[in-house]
Amino acid sequence: MSIVNYATREITCKIVYYGAGRSGKTTNLQYIYAQVPPERKGNMVSLATQTDRTLFFDFLPLDLGNISGFTTRFQLYTVPGQVYYQTTRKLVLQGADGVVFVADSQARQLAENVESLQDLHLNLAEHGMDARHVPLVIQYNKRDLPPEMLTGVDELQEALNFRGVPDFQADALHGPGVFETLRGISELVLKKLSAHQAAK
Amino acid sequence: MTTVAVTEAWAEAPLRQFVEDARVDLALLLHASGQVLGQAGFERRMDVMTACALAAGINATAAELGRMLDGKPFGALHYAGKSKQTFLALVDTRRGAFLLFCVFDERASLGIVQLYFGEFRHRLSAAAPDAEGPSTPLNEHFEGELNRNLAALFGRT
Image (cartoon, rainbow over all chains, first blue to last red; front, side, top):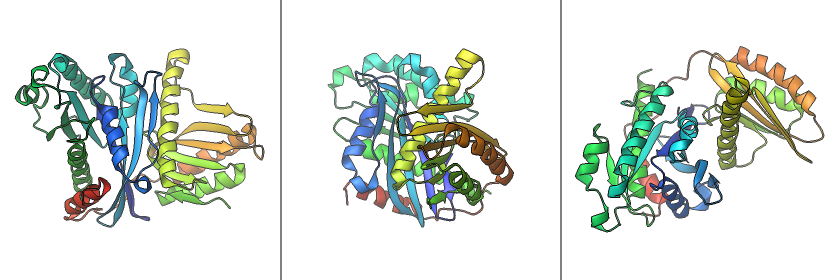
């Protein structure tokens, strides 16, 4: 749920990075955190286990600056990917304005990606959100790995992107595709916000 | 006097009254999803957002624990530290459910905070409007501005 403050002309949006365990959600946020100058970001909060697996969520507030006269801020969250944190994922997803689905491109992870996407749809439904209307982009991560380890993008598209949402190939560890993914979801979220407000 | 800032004007008076009455150091009023509605005492906007995310996380976790252990969500939480205490509770309004999170020291007490929280809940419920705000926030050029700002954010200009 975007928050629009007309008095101070501020917009705040919540974006959730979703996906199977070890797909690279936290890595996306870590890369963004490393790239953004200190005055444009808050501290990155990671509620993680002792082995640095996300336990509850990671959180990174970003200041995008002035857009259409509104100071625009994005709150980036990740969810824990492991299957048994289903309840936690649902909680973090509450009030999301947009979702980045981070898919692990490794061939052996295809089933986990599909399962995680189904889990996303289920959790959106349980929040009363129509998955067809939630701004969503898909990131095919780990494209830097040797080709023999990867599922082809066409096959990933067929398995995961039946909605035809914007998709991005990425190597979140080193950066390629991270910025483009964030830009993609930002556009969708702001477009939807603008259309929603115009319809009022 | 503690500075109070809100994202929707109707929430300001109840929040300001609560902060003054209960003499809390910090207060956050937020949506259950973690989006801020108002704050008092914080200096950095980014700290507000982080505190909201964490407070919403605490509430969500406690609610689930409550359902598991007691059949219903825990309605309020209190933490008593050596010098600082925190209190977190839910307020239902026509506009939806909001969380109040506050931090206080020896100038206040849990009893005082709970007492004024009761009054705050009534004031906030009475002040909450039905409808959301008006007008179109973004012009047709927002995508260009967004791209420029994101590029600057990532040092690509």
